[in-house]
Image 1 (tube, rainbow, N blue to C red):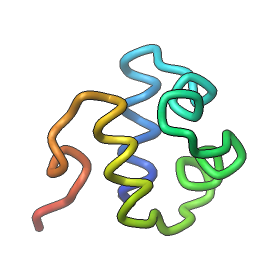
Image 2 (cartoon, rainbow, N blue to C red):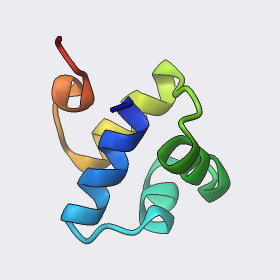
Image 3 (cartoon, rainbow, N blue to C red):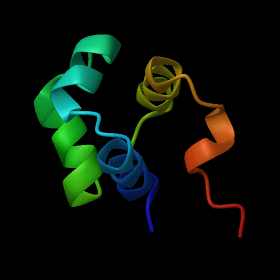
Length: 65
């Protein structure tokens, strides 16, 4: 599972809309959608902003295996 898929799963499990995340991060909704749904590689600053907006540790969506 990709980082974007894990973020998408977290959003759905916690009832968070992509539009809310876009607003909190300043990342356009279209880019959030592409990251979450189409596996677009996430840039480091995007990842940082998403983790900060969701108030989670940076390691939350990283697969350590």
